[in-house]
Image 1 (cartoon, protein in one colour):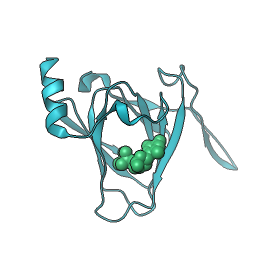
Image 2 (tube, helix red, strand yellow):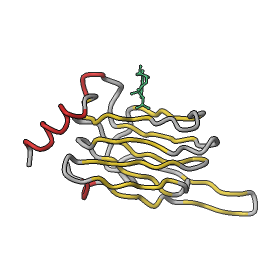
Image 3 (cartoon, helix red, strand yellow):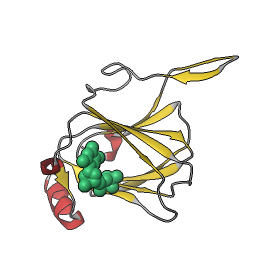
Length: 137
Ligand code: TYD
């Protein structure tokens, strides 16, 4: 996959006098079935997360509170997305290296994932990742 396959997705939101509500329906707002949900929070100042790529896993990342930067890398190019709005998600297809940085102290990042956790699905070494990504063109 290349960076062109990553995109920001506008999520439905319903606002009334009580406040706001957003929702995400699998295979409608995102192109995969949701097999796992996790969330990142309480990230220490200056700490980064991610630093890996997935072989098959697809994800949607949403900053439910606060903000963070997600840098995506397809082995040729890098692009940074600033997530700050709970009505917008970042669709991350398989095969992209990601680094998550600049979390505000209140940041809560929701991640919807297409597969159960499997360490076999990870590239955790950047040089290994680069040689695979570049060999695919
Ligand atoms: P890690 O991949 O380092 O997190 P991040 O991508 O945010 O930097 O995962 C940290 C630990 O949590 C690691 O031991 C694997 C475990 N983990 C699970 O058991 N299940 C999960 O769904 C996730 C995302 C991680």
